[in-house]
Amino acid sequence: MSDPDPGGPQTPSRTRFWMPAVIASMSMFLGVLDTSMMNVAVPSIVQDLNTTVSSMQSAIAVYSMVMATLIIPLGTLRAAIDTKRLLVVTLAIYSVGTLMAGLSPTFAVLFLGWSVIEGIAAALLLPITYSIVVENYEGSDRAKAFGALGGVTAVGVAAGPMIGGTLTTYASWRWGFVGEFLVVLVIVALTLRYLASQLSDEAIKFDAGGTILSILGIVGIIGGSLLAGNYGWITPLRPLEISGTLIQPLGLSPAIWCIGLGIAILTAFVHWELHQERADRR
Image (cartoon, rainbow, N blue to C red; front, side, top):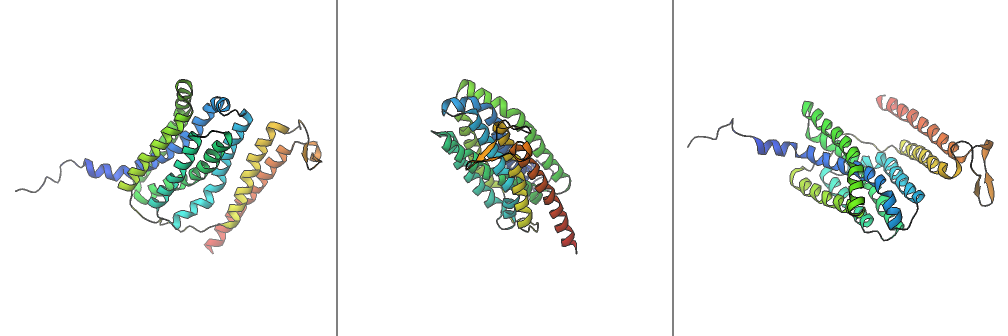
């Protein structure tokens, strides 16, 4: 009997080779789709949960704040936990938040499930997708995988409003979270089958100073943006009152002070990181 033709079809092996990129792309798409879809569903959620537009805007802002502030410290977990296990745990957290949001009887449950729990999971998804690509591909294959991530991000941003609008018009905003939950199940199944268990090769050191500065800076900017709705951006619509004390420094809105402080802290964060980089080279 002759040996199998070495030049025969290699589809199965190539499929397995690109599955990590598919897993990373689906994870990225999930995170991007979530935010863009929620923005369109706001009016329906306001009516269904008997809440206000400003409350929903706060929920969206808190989601962004949680994700932005935790992405750096949580990203260091890649050095301690293998990527496969970390992704499965992250998706499990994400699914809990998705179910809470989709089944939420009140705004408070939606806020906890989506803004907080899903926000934490989303903060982990970005560094995990990066690790999956770096650990599984090199050279031109790595460039192709990162290109796929970029394309998926653009598609998610564009598709989110269309999907969200269609669901809220013909069904319910809750079906968006149901769909996300089903996507999570598919990603978990693919991860368990195709993704190898391996620790990141990067030497990741937890930077406490940089983490604190980045969190404070982002909270300042996003918090200031939230205050602007009630107090104005520069000229105050009304004074900020805390325990009977009016706070209106230099006659300006507290929003511009928070944003300015956030920018100043992020500037300090950049200088801190440059200093740390120079210190590591010595």
